[in-house]
Every structure is written in structure tokens, then in C-alpha cells.
Image 1 (cartoon, helix red, strand yellow):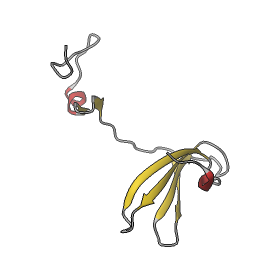
Image 2: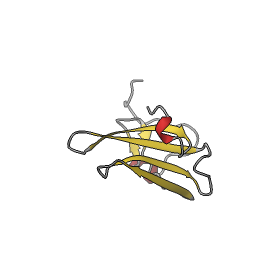
Image 3: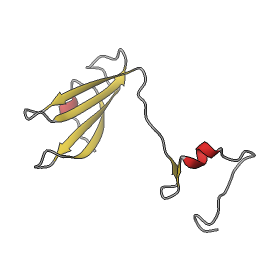
Image 4: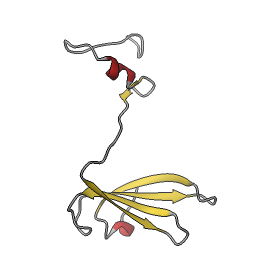
Length: 100
């Protein structure tokens, strides 16, 4: 059977209407919304007011302790964000990581 020929189900339960509505058939994946819970967030800016680094960590984790999800934002000449790359580590050493 070719992809997207018909809906296939595994198991004994059909998906609910909410599950069906949240399915992106072009991506063959469910849509999700991330809601950080019990997380802290840190920001670092360049001299021009652009946010360059964003860090997420569990509440209570020290800035120098590994366990942070780090984002590095890249901007074009018009100060428009063009990419967000990630690394894992600690907030204190954020500038020394390789982001991909």
C-alpha cells in the first residue's frame, strides 16, 4: 500500500477526533505545543539589542551546571532572526559551544 492511500490503525482503538485534527499528514506527524513547566529561562543580548542566546533549565539548576538547553539566534543585515541553533551544556559556558 502506498503512503497516504488510506488511514491505517494499529491496536484496538481508533484515534479520537482531537488526535485526527492534530495530525499533519504532509509531515506524517502529530502537532504539539510546548509549554515549559517548572523551567527557568535566561537571555543574553548583543550590543544592538538583539537576543543572541536563550537558555532553558529546570528550576533550581545552577547556571554553571550542565543540563541547559541553549539556543543561539542568528540575524541578517536587517536584524531579522534567520536561524535558531541549539546546544546542550551550561549557561555560563554558552559562548564556547558548537551550535547546530
